[in-house]
Image (cartoon, one colour):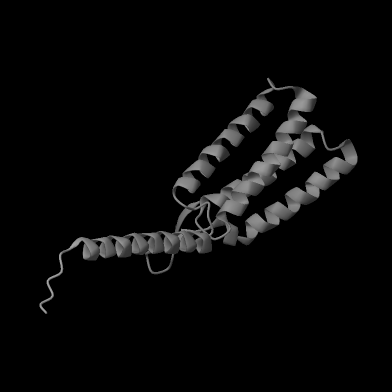
Length: 161
């Protein structure tokens, strides 16, 4: 199960976050090691090295699906790995190769995911979101103060002397 829910002992559900799963971390370690071995043996543009880059990207993409503070960092890392894999794939096999087209599809998926995250303010770290909210509130309060001043200045004086 990549992203979803796992039952806990009380019968309720807790969110499953792949980033917290040690197996994913081990998978990433093994993929990176395999990538280095394939690069050393056959070069960076070998089919196996490209496949390992795609596997690494897939791990990061999976981590980016669950909400957590490093979500955007992981989608950026996935995108970077896919872009490198696509560049090498197209150089060796061409743009029409099925694997090239699959990597292009994965990159489009990531672009869509990033756009959705951006619209839902996931793209911005919480401290940036808080600063924007504070700035909006300040702008609102300033406009309200100016409005009250104009009302007071335009209202006839009701003071009795």
